[in-house]
Picture 1: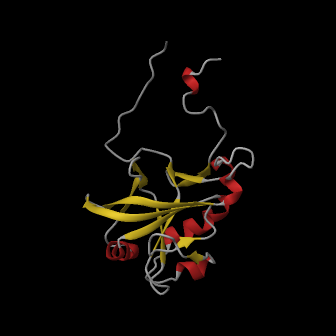
Picture 2: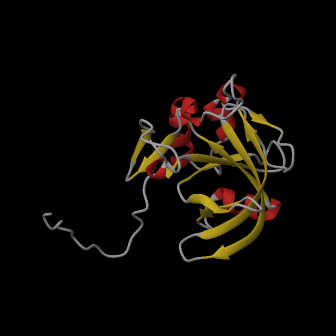
Picture 3: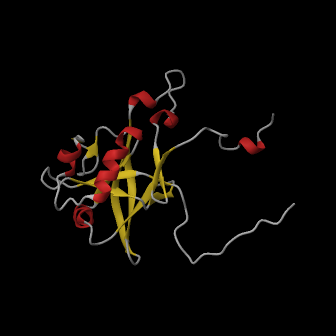
Length: 191
């Protein structure tokens, strides 16, 4: 086998792709905001927990810290332009729900609104804020999940996220997910 040539770079964020998410926050209509987040992820199964990282100077930072809640709204192909716009415009200058035409709807367990057009919404309660450097990490428990009914298989009632046409982000570009190449455990499955 030929030796693979690798180049060494300085330490950096190369964990790609990342999910494209719009995080909605605020307790009242006049406070509602949407921030596009690149640094988000799953951190625990039981209880279900996730994290988002936000720069303290961002408009949504104080809103989320004060209210202790946010909603992660997954982004599909149709929502990609809205997610991009919300990522380059500040909630200090724009009402992002009005500007994008997105619909805020009441969450069931937190004060932050959900984005109705999103295929999947995760309601999150902040449990801890950890300063990291350029960003602070908001650790949160996922207290409710809402999934668009069209994503459920009528035969098995299982969620088919492939139908959601979700978007990921990698090095300045947006991509949709590709073809299924296997399922969990396929490498050890008996033929």
